[in-house]
Image (cartoon, rainbow, N blue to C red):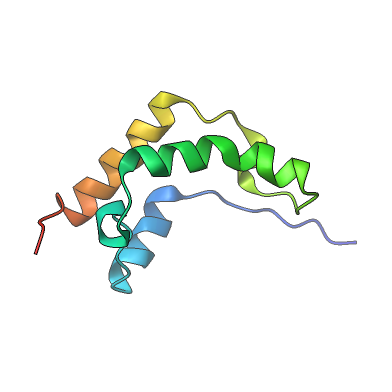
Length: 84
């Protein structure tokens, strides 16, 4: 059996999403950053309790620092949300 190596590149993933024109800022979906952070922090528990497949979130604890990093990266790439 061949071994498969998976690379985790959040900046590369963000670049691809941005280049594709996908809006990922929470305000564009009618939710807040606090909603996003609550969902990310609960994701591992939810996946495990429902028997869903393993994901990258199973590998680490989601901290407040991690959530701030996500927000900072998204805002740096997309800019602050401007209500229309």
